[in-house]
Image 1 (tube, rainbow, N blue to C red):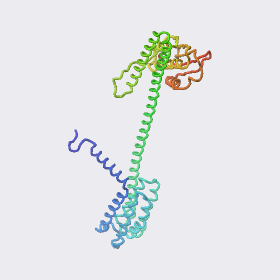
Image 2: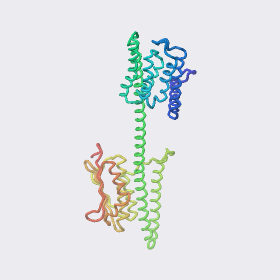
Image 3: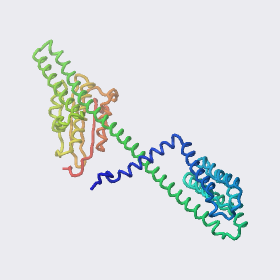
Image 4: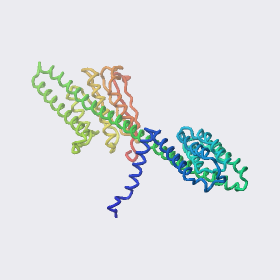
Length: 409
């Protein structure tokens, strides 16, 4: 149950995280503000210890002049202003004051400020710099231990060694945490980039698919309409009834093209979830396709070899579009006296579609999107497509695709 006074679990942690992020952002914008604040805090603490004579509780010599105490208090804290940019340099700047602190026997608490640049070293600098930093912190204690032998060596070096070790370990832990968070951020960034790339690839593939469908729908039907219009214009001079039939066929073909185009556009509209999802054209629709081509003036013979087997809808659509595009190219390029032949052959492991015509062959048909679209469709099903002049004259398109597992007769 959620406590109404404290809010949902994790709310306090979320606020703390927000405050920390705001503080880090402010520090990145104005780093000197935080540096000055930290320096003033430790300097105030050092001067307070000096003014209140709190240093006397640990001092080995109570007769240290006040000016030396003041100089050491400032010397231990003022260099902290540069602790993040030059932590090892700050430790070196503290060495004279650390030596004076040990030699005079004052043992000011301000010398603990040397652990702050040690922390910065462990967090931001190569860890090998901790070795010279350890020497810088401990070596100035030797003269004081020699001058005041009554104080045990462990009392002089123990706190320094333990303080240095714990501070270095804390800095290493913070460093590990920061590197882990940085790696997570980098991974998230790379995943985001990869996601965007995948989205771009998917969008490009979808654009190519739509381009193929638009080309096949519009190109084929316009070619049929053009053939019907040419035939109707020729027949109008001699047989008006044939011209009327051509006009009616043009109307029928146009309406079919508009229906297919509207269905494709409706599917693309995100705000139209109830778009007409009629089945895509398949080999069973070849009769109506060939009837339209024949009406446009191109004689077409169809032959089916082997035992037909059920195929995936996508493969059926590919075969239909390839035959449609091949016949469309025949209408465009073969000439007025050409004829076409469509052969669909079901083998034991593959299906072959061959479309040949008796028109004018040649390299002119290699241009445009038609053949490229056929090859793209064929490649989706690991098939091969050959298109070129037929040895006996005319043009031939031959498609071969392997039958999916479980569909062979």
